[in-house]
Image (cartoon, rainbow, N blue to C red; front, side, top):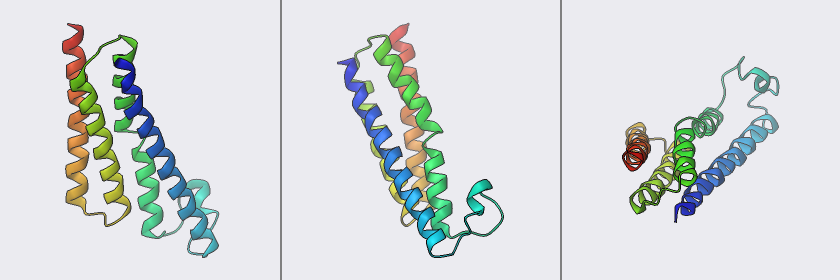
Length: 137
């Protein structure tokens, strides 16, 4: 059963890949439409950019922050062979919240809605870590 933790982890990888594609398309479009100079992307500095560039870049970068803690804790469940339906449910909840967070960020970008999904997803990761420690004690 602990191998089931691979599925939410894989979905997070898919989400990161999708956001990377959205980010790349936004960047290509910005150069094609001449709203951003190609030189900007060498250092990500030197001019004002459209909101879509900032949002997609930040959202992509977000996928390498809290989700890293998620990958580590899920990997430890698998490595130590810990079977926990509770952890599996929390892991899936984390993924759903991250998908919702990205959707909010990349669409209507309501800060309060984004903050709620962020903190709930962070709480999921902390819950996974506490549960892991309780399982190992």
